Amino acid sequence: MSTTRHTKVLIIGSGPAGYTAAVYASRAMLNPILVQGIQPGGQLTITTEVENWPGDAMVQGPDLMVRMEAHAKEVGTEIIGDHINSIDLSKRPFTALGDSGTTYTADAVVLATGAQAKWLGLPSEEKFKGFGVSACATCDGFFYRNKEVVVIGGGNTAVEEALFLTNFASKVTLIHRRDSLRAEKILQDRLFKNPKVAILWDHSVDAVLGDENPLGVTGVQARHATTGESTTVPCDGFFVAIGHAPASELVKDQLETHMGGYVVTKPDSTATSIPGVFAAGDLTDHIYRQAVTSAGMGCMAALEAEKFLAEQEETESTALSAAE
Ligand code: FAD
Ligand code: NAP
Figure (spheres, helix red, strand yellow):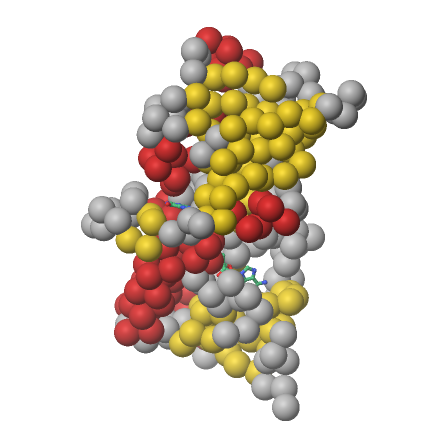
């Protein structure tokens, strides 16, 4: 049977942005509902050690997200295992439809649906994810001190990741499918000048190679774009940096987006182009894409939602008094 649930604040997404928004909105007595989506806990549930979450020198990503969920529950958030498959932001209350058949209506919405790294789609890549294959050098680079790594991609992210990895690795090989990078020239200059960096132009990656026991990467199988010649590049870590895709499908036709789908927010704010709709975390962030920045934006979104709702109430009560 389909049901309708109304809430002052509907939070969509259960990564660091969503759970932080939930903690703040609950403590502001807004009784939020948080819908978790198909990846409860978000991207950090697919990694192992997180070493840059302040307060924890090392915490397992999935454990951190279990703690965030418990915190949000503890302060009163209603957490629902559902996935929003459509949302109507054209009028208030906003209306969202869940896969479960539940309709959620809300006076304010916090969108925290995150972003997903694009992957090559190779079975061997899937097999070694978290065991030598990563999409986040900032997170995992530290594990490759004095080791050899390969980065694939030719954009700003790939070049920044490759440069960042030179702080740890003994050698960084950047593999790119063409003979020129799309990254900014200034980044390219830095890359070309770095003695730890080698570039394999005009190559794609066909397979990640590795050991079974313990599971770990030993190299990648690269192939020349025109000759088809196959080359093995030995490495301990393989970083995929071929772009990130924000999870903005739900709202891309209703909200302003940029940089390939990231939701645009006002400067120093999480407010979107629709009053009462706030966006936080990787969904809006094409630069930092970190747990702590996402959590920070989740906090901002809840505080801004609270302010928005208070202003709405004030306007409504003024209108009511004037009518009397
Ligand atoms: P996400 O974590 O992406 O969560 C998005 C949430 O939205 C999910 O719960 C999903 O189920 C939900 N959702 C999506 N669509 C819908 C829908 N239609 N309906 C309902 N729910 C929906 N950052 C660090 O700071 N340190 C690290 O060590 C680190 N390691 C990482 C390792 C890996 C392998 C990856 C991929 C990322 C790593 N990151 C790390 C980055 C970090 O995970 C992200 O910056 C952070 O998770 C973004 O948080 P978020 O809340 O914006 O979104
Ligand atoms: P991007 O600019 O889309 O670049 C993706 C790169 O990956 C491209 O070089 C692309 O090759 C390559 N690629 C894509 N699919 C591939 C595949 N299947 N196999 C092999 N290679 C593949 O993505 P990004 O680097 O993540 O940057 C995203 C946006 O964020 C950009 O607008 C960027 O400017 C911005 N950004 C800015 C900064 C900064 O300002 N410092 C830092 C990071 C990101 P081709 O070149 O052949 O298409």
